[in-house]
Length: 166
View 1 (cartoon, rainbow, N blue to C red):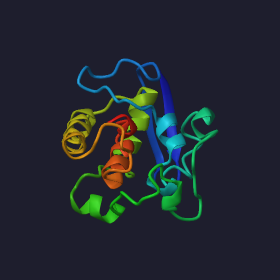
View 2 (view 1 turned 135 degrees about the horizontal axis):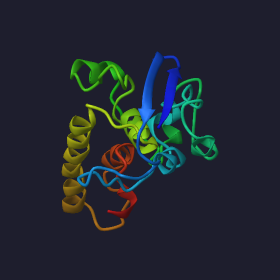
View 3 (view 1 turned 60 degrees about the horizontal axis):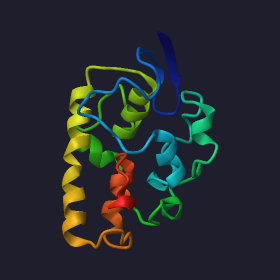
View 4 (view 1 turned 180 degrees about the vertical axis):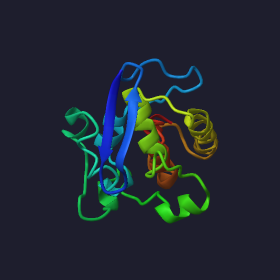
């Protein structure tokens, strides 16, 4: 086990344990198609999401990541479109828990690293609920037409679904 201490703009002095090997031992119901590295390289959240978290995660995750330290830039997103609600919306919906103040993707990054927590069940259910968007893409778009429903496709990338293959 390894202990991680977080000190970034949104969390100071938060510690957690890595109890599983990186990228392994996932819940059998949770099988993301993209790793955090792949998601960051494709371009998500306008590049703004992880700019102050580099000390917490492997350097390799950021080598080709599309990041924008100043402000979100939708042109850095794979589909060049804004597909995120503001953090205030997520807080209002009570989707944000104190251990992961940035939301689902932060939870996923930490889960991928090997942290397991009391919030895993809730977050896995939220991830699974995104499959409704896959169904909508399959119903409305020709296979491989990535220009069809780009906002939904971008949102699915945020949730580790490879919407380029739908």
